Amino acid sequence: MRKVVLVTGANSGIGLALCERLLSHDTEGLHLCLACRNMQRAQAARSDLLASYPAAQVDLLQMDTSSVSSVLSAAQEVKVRYDRLDYLYLNAGIMPNPEFDVKAFFKGLFSRLGNWSRFCATKAEPRSWFGPPLVMLTVLPLILKTYSTGQALNLTAPQNMQQTCSA
Image (cartoon, rainbow, N blue to C red; front, top):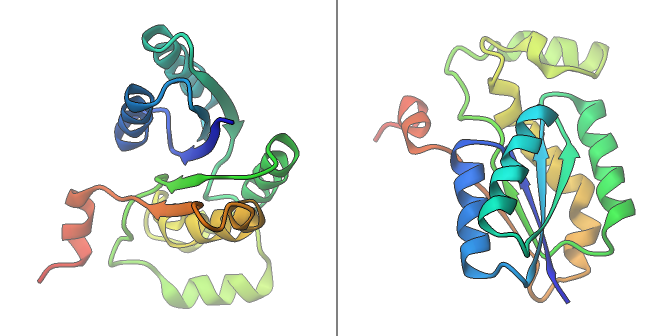
């Protein structure tokens, strides 16, 4: 039985490199799902992966972690497609900008939910703060089905961590 692996932000950068690395170690034992905002870029990444690993099983999933409705819709799709989730790699987004407008966020949060980007100083910021935890919570039942081996990992680029987490 193939291990089911979901990678957010899988069409470039760390996410794509992670997918390549996973397939290089176990092409036949993985069922890889690339969760991406841009489906054209996702399809290109899938094509590149399959060119290098023709025996791989690679699916695509539309998911924008800055949108509540997109995350909820994608999570529902994951539950329909897969009966379990062995690994979840939360890669989409970057570390938050220190200029995050907390007051505007909470004011907006209690007035209406939807697209978090209107509360933040940078467009990428909400994907890091709220998208990955929401993805995790929505697919948690599938991870719990593999509770002895299921894992969720949150990834971020080191250069972004230095901006807000200096020692």
